[in-house]
Image 1 (cartoon, rainbow, N blue to C red):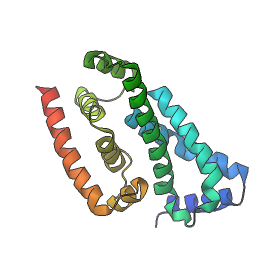
Image 2 (image 1 turned 120 degrees about the horizontal axis):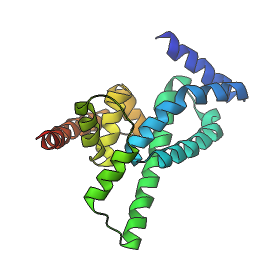
Image 3 (image 1 turned 45 degrees about the vertical axis):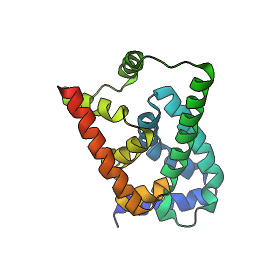
Length: 185
């Protein structure tokens, strides 16, 4: 077990005991990663920050019930994933209710304006291809490759069996390859 994991487990235990400084340190350590993940899922920085804020409220309220501090990384991603999924579903319902089906070009232009500046053209193309995938595919790919979670950690974070995670990763990679290939032509 690496030193960082041990430190985080001790930090979680301090949080469970009500140590406010530990909570602040936990937020400082995890907040940027959670915002990146939520941004990938929601496609919008402002929404991602709102979803993460709601997740932190749930974490502070529920951390005392976390039985194993070693499970914190998967647990916090599960909390965040549920909040993001709720937002996505709500957004889909709002769009349906208002009958506003937006033009795909407008969506891509908005994503390009909101996307974080980074890396090479190929890297931006790849991120764009990931962004166009369904939410479930984005979730498993982001956790695997951007957050470097193991299959077991992804399964725990998303509340899925490991076999399902492997299957979703397989099909998400295939979809990503097709989307990226289409974009690069």
